[in-house]
Image 1: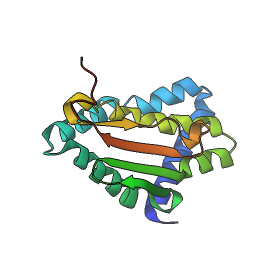
Image 2: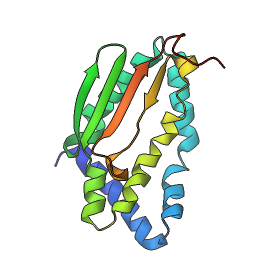
Image 3: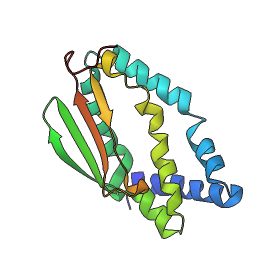
Length: 159
């Protein structure tokens, strides 16, 4: 097991321990997602607002996290990476494996919910791209699709 995987296992087991102690999925979700929500959202907004190319900045960050943060416990495939679309699909999720293996697969969506903190920072009109994730492994999907797509002025709804 590589160091990123060890870190991710520790974090996932801490979530499991909190659930076993608190006994409430709602409390655990709030405790896991809310404390850093504003910081993550603000940092992501700042990165995108000050980037020369917000789409490319987010794609570069996604690729760096894949390489340095997730480790061997995750398997990624790139269905598309062409400068206007970056589709990064997770086919193996260590978080889900650890939680399901410890009898608590219902906690996997809590891990997925944390991403909402940075997802909410993406403003397609301002940043020129949108993010789509229709499902996750943790919510019963076959993969976790992290799909970043540039938008053009004509593709962005008026508003």
